[in-house]
Length: 146
Image 1 (spheres, rainbow, N blue to C red):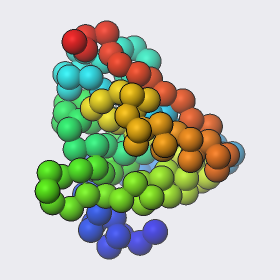
Image 2: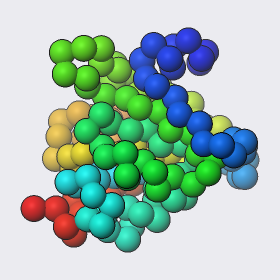
Image 3: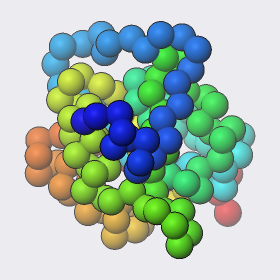
């Protein structure tokens, strides 16, 4: 994947720290995380742990910046998703990027404002990644969500 594709489909944000290579050489993992209403205080402990352990965050547009700010230094943050009537990142691109990262040993978290398993897009993403051999987990809802 080349940098121009990432710049076209999503904005890549780098923290100040250099980006480390994943520490493990085996396959990584992907976790689909519902962020709820967007406030960090509404996130459950499992969601916070997953975000802080991620080496790569895929972030849908409706996810709050305060949630993204929880990422550890050096984690790659890639914004994907719908932008109203504007450019949208194709689902196949998102899935392929996750698949490539997991195969390189990355710990990927896909942050979604809604419950990933309550939407057809989230269920399809999980099914396709599992069919490709990816270890996929999900953290649905949040304690503070209405």
